[in-house]
Length: 238
Image (cartoon, rainbow, N blue to C red; front, side):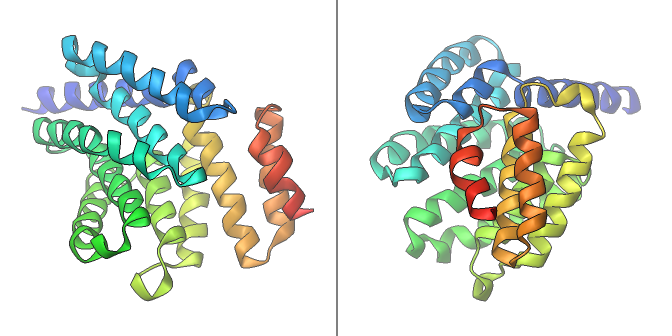
């Protein structure tokens, strides 16, 4: 049993490191035509996942990337087109890997995006999302991805419904520490760049512009072509 658990842990760690450090996903995240590039990613990885179950979580990350990209211009039609497949994929992963926290956190985040488009769904999806995130934190407390998605939930959720800016900032700091503790996983890691960008935004919202500026400049040192930070976020901090 112990040997099986060790093999499972190694499999999950290897897959997660690969998925978040995927060069094609990194390109999609930075591309100015984000949605169309993510769509291509999802199509290719959907085909791959049919023959190789180990790529399902990689697909789920790209599906999440696409759903998140629709938020920029509120493209609800595209969101709805890909939402059900994303949920189905994550539910299948969770069913097959009951002790793995990352897919639970990702499904919680997907429900959060859905509530962003349909606030009335909060009565139904809010408790499900919260329960999934708490389970994810319990099962994978040292996962940078889980901590990042938890920080996002605290940042975007209105205070009256459990949002907490200070908790978000604290969690973003922990997330960045966890990512940076594994330098080999930082190359082509779009989730790490995204964490830097949102941590900076949290500091901006808190009114701490210098801390936000430092994070945005750090992101640009890692990726000079990070146009969202270069042309939108950093000028706000300046």
